[in-house]
Length: 342
Image (cartoon, rainbow, N blue to C red; front, side, top):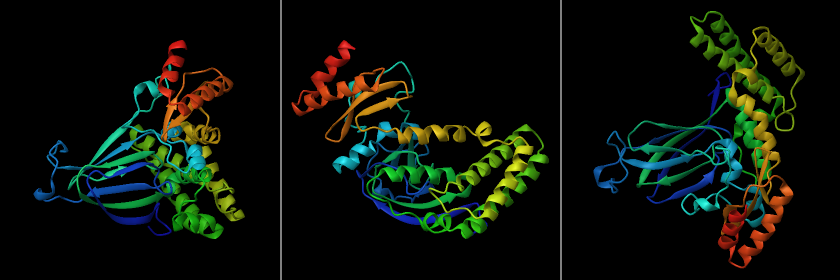
């Protein structure tokens, strides 16, 4: 997309994958949306009859997604930094008794499984959803990655997450160049967003019903979110005074119409909690909801959780016992005894 567009194409790629390949838990590269298409397979290449979609087309890749709020249960970045090895939930080798338990239904994540069909519909991967990919059959996949200027909060999330890693990823030019140049931020990001917002305000005024009005309010909430994000100087360019004035003027228009991103968009309401939770990640203890604490140990890179405790100190004591048990190869016995006594 050009400077006036609402989105920026940051990468186009063709990926050739071999059956049985697994891409372990990861985030995509910069808070982007990824559109993926599996190319058609000849019948001679359709080797595994177990993987067929309802449409009759072969499944070539299986994407498994979790929500951002469960990231620290999926991947333990601080442990990876310390050991140099991936520390992630192993979906294929984690008995249920090793998972955190509790009365809250939200303790464990819901996994979203999305098949990619050869010659089928495209698959759109959402930004910053931790995911892993299993290749079911030899295949070729075409993908396009695009950062949306209406979802710059996703770029913020990725940059904050990347600050935790001890290896710095290679950032897209749009992030490295445009979002860190105050003049380009104004001309290529703020002005297009304000122009789109002006059109959206007019469309809201002319909306033919509540459903259409709700749509335009959500668009305006996204624009408001992105404009606020651009003022985060620890991540992006120090804003020009002209940029600040432009944003304030538009925000006054939104306020006059009762448009508040936090009230209209659940993503925006969750944003602060996600960032706060990221800052409180702990290599020793898994904290759920700010109320319950679990000892966290790893066995060959796979996490094992202790019993729920009311304080971090109690969970740390549990962890010492479990770490000692792991060294003595008695982790399972010790953990089961701990759960029986809880």
